Length: 352
Ligand code: KG4
Ligand code: ZN
Image 1: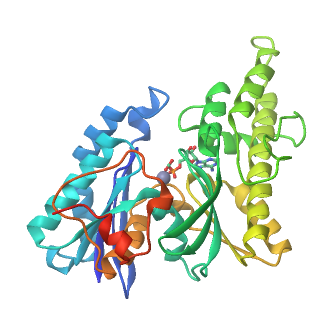
Image 2 (image 1 turned 90 degrees about the vertical axis):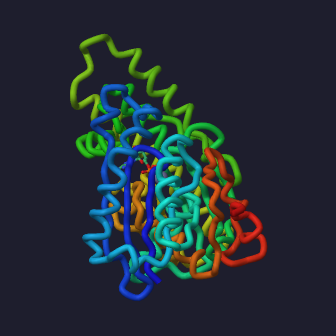
């Protein structure tokens, strides 16, 4: 089986071709960062328009890179949610239209299932079951991954997602959008323990997170510094303190979840999974428990179509596909998913 995948849930336009035997044949990505920078965040209407502009050329480039013609494609996977509705609709409409024109099945993929299954593209893939920490711009979840499509959410954030906290605090520090990677780069110049910041919910039992208090604490700190008195070293020290607080909290809860499930494998996925401090610390802490950390390559932590191809292929291979109606979901709880090919999974598919 060979699958063409399309991802347009937020501000990256992506296309990929995955072959069941030969692996990933191509992946193409267009980032809209430059388009949204002037606004300090993603402008949904601009995102949709740019997806429309970029999508078909990107699909063609992906097919060319894969050395595939339309008739080589056995199915089309597209991100159906959660995400920005207008942005999702551009990818869904094109995917459905191509599938109709080519006489092939199309499958709507859950974006977070894509993130969770991204490490399945690596060698070796994580064994199942495993525990996953999924940290992106919109979500912070600890998941007991029993099997593909069988997800039990152990805990999530009560307010801001980890990536959102990185982005909002980066903005406070005057860093350009998107702030997460910028704050991480600045933190590399910072000194440890220069500022004390709270570790929200760390002392509470369970697997929940809360990151909005961190942003408030940083804002208060910055207000005590006289205008113009903030040196580059001070900004780097604050960035370091923020990163340390977020990384420490994420690691502590992820390790707690690993102990709870008893799994030997831990997966780190989502955009914040590209954070090197988090990757290193989590890897070391998992090893201390005799467990192994599985990571997607850096490019597949942030949004991409390869992960959508991987998730979609499991379902297409199990005979799942959507009808002709084009429908996307801004909100879509992960736990509504069912294993590929199961009666529940078929029942949840869109009508013809
Ligand atoms: O998964 P993703 O690409 O999009 C969503 O589905 O949300 O994640 C994007 C998030 C953003 O908040 C971005 O700032 C954050 O991931 N991010 C990082 C790093 N690279 C991306 N946060 C911290 N350190 C990084 N190196
Ligand atoms: Zn994402």
